[in-house]
Image (tube, rainbow, N blue to C red; front, side, top):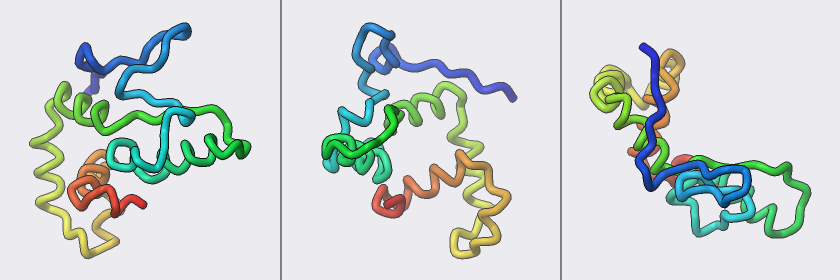
Amino acid sequence: MTATVSLRSDIHAGTADSSPGPALKTFAQLRRTDVATVGGKGANLGELTAAGLPVPPGFVLGIDAYEAFCQSNELGPRITAELARTNPDDPTALVGLPLIALCRMLLAEGVSALT
């Protein structure tokens, strides 16, 4: 299967001479309060950038982009089927799990599981 990226019109990456859209945030735009939409690592990179520490320039795709990708590629049923066959209490069961299903499982547990 070939995945396509078709983002909603309100979710866009922006252009070289415009600011990123709501789904794409530069580290400079992120703070600790953004954990729910970009995860702990993204929020912490924003804090480090704001503190003036040497952080390479970068960006984070938010949960809106992830959800739009899953919707546009109709991944929900496939991810649900993978998760139904997986025991989250067995770390060895997670080894062969597709990354997107693992991400969905972690998000279902709450963003606090990612930090």
